[in-house]
Amino acid sequence: MIWLRRATAVLLAVVFIILSVLVMVAFRVNGTVGNPDFYAEQLHQADVYHFIYDDVLPAALEESGVGEDAEGVGAIISPFKPHLVDVARQTVPPEWLQSQVEHAVNEVVPYAWGETDTLSITIQLKDRVEAGAGALKSLLHREGVFPVLYEQLIDLITDEIAPAEDETLDMLAISEEEMETMLRRVVPEGWLLAQLDSAIDEMVPYLTKETEHFTLEIDLTEPLNKLEGALIDFLSKPETYDSLVVDMLAEAITQNLGEVTELPFGIELTDDEIIATARDILTLDWYQVLVGDIVSQIFAYLKGEQDELELTIPLADRKPEIAEALSRLADVKMESAFDDLPVCSGAHLLELLSDPSLENIPCRPFDISYQEFKDLVGIDIGSLVQPVIELAIPEEWTLTEADMNQLFGGEGEDNILNQLRGLVQEGLTFTDGDLVEIMDTDAAALEDIRKSIADGLVFTERDLRDLMSDMGEGGAGEQLVAFEQVRSGLGAAKQWVNFIWIIPFLMMIGAGALGGRRWSSRLIWAAALLAAMAIIAYIIFGPVFSATAQPMIDQALSMEFGQPEGITLLIVEKGNILAHNAIDSFVGGLRNQSLGLIIASVVLIGVGAVWHNWDRIRRA
Image (cartoon, rainbow, N blue to C red):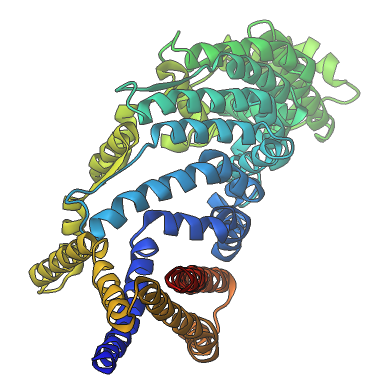
């Protein structure tokens, strides 16, 4: 009976419509969420890779406060800050990042959906390290970068060396400004930049494991030669002359003179008088002639050509002049004291003449000068004082290593000469052994980093399971079991999804066969059923979705993160764009499929109608 057949066809049509819509969704899920190309398309559409460099990294640098410190590491990093994003872009360009992400998605999605049982993500880093080294060298040579860094390094070194209290370097009276000038002369900007380039070139093969060892050697020949010239210029200053000659040498002379400074009549040669006399003889010109020899002795010590630092300054040619000058001074003071004595009476005069002695002169003879008195009694003050003074003054003045330590920063590691001597003799080298020693307990991590750079970062399904185990608390095993069950279920669904369409297809054929009497009418019934299903699907995923689901999704996305700021706001906004694009792509695909089925069903209905009319005409 026709009504029973058509009633059955209607029931099949209802079930067909519901089942077909579900099958459409299943196919769309498989074509989007289960398809690695869908993720790559969404990331590309949202321009995520350029967004990272153009927006995220600058915002992250700004919020991190890197390079904002006025001192220390922050001051050193500050010249690089405006260029760090460019360095990152050159090291890890967006195209490379995109290829790695797509490679990871192509591995993860099939594994997560149970299509494969293995997962292997390999990210090659060797070429990125080499690219990063090139980017860093290029940055250092960029105008306005290294000169700023150089100035900050000079300031940092000066602050470490120069004493904070009086801004002078012990007795050498070197100011911070003079120290900076000397550093710039000894360590010029171009030379330091060349050393950094060499260090980068040496480190890259070690990090990539092309070599197992590295040695950073800094040639100190040029700085050492410049330092020698700088010291000659500095030590020739009048201020240094005052410290070395007037203060130290004169003090040594006064200590050696001892009792010679005590003269008759209670007269003494004071320290100031001795220092003034020594300064008149040991002139600045005399000192400056010796500076070159002094510096040569210092550098012989630095180079290890002599074991101890003793600066020998010859004084033999100056001894007679100093002795004669001090003798004259003593004679002048004695004459003044003699002239101040009272005139001798007759008895005192006879006593004085009978035993003339400079040790005891109570009075002076009437109308006799000091010179006449000396001639009369045959006494010469100079001949008495001068030999003793000559004995007190050494043939040469030696500054011992202890004296030099006092001049150059004291004992220990703070002594500049000791530091320079160690650098010159041992050479300024830094090896992989030094690096391992510095890292101490982190040396194993360094080796792991080198291995990862050389072999690439490898992430497999075993690493994923280990990660899930570490993240789980007490139920890690259950989580792994659940994960594998989900994978297994998704894998089975993926295998059957390609055949599940057969069921609604057979239902559509059955409904058409039951509803029509001839093949043409059966085709019209089946096509009409397909059209009804497609129209309903189009309404669900079109107007109904836009009116009901879309506002709820928008509200959920806006409420999820509250009111974010800064970099979080950027990420949330981009995440919302990705979510909207993905949803629109998913739902839009269903709409397009529905529209395509509507068009196909209309065509089939037209074909069926033409076939039906032709069949009627043929039978008539």
